[in-house]
Amino acid sequence: MQVCLFDNKIKQIINSVLNRLSLNKRVDVPKFFNRVTTLLQAKDAQWKSMKTVGALRSKKTLPVPVNHDSLYKEAVMMMQNIKRKPRCFNTLKAPKSL
Image (cartoon, rainbow, N blue to C red; front, side, top):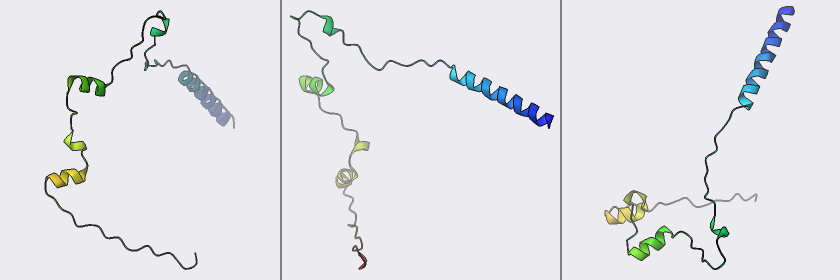
């Protein structure tokens, strides 16, 4: 009986130590934002946001890059002249009890 009590106390001590160790762990949080410092500028100044990729492409007249792996399969199959048979599904049968 005393051996069981001793064993339980050791388990309780080990569990409490492990809980404390896991709770006191420091974690570095990465920054995923940029502070807007333009709100501190004079009221006469105009705020300009960053240009989007689409705006830069249209300004420089660059085409939109096409990734052929990301195209729809039907478009790729039409380009390669691959034809499939249309799929035929069974008619939907509802039970009469409904």
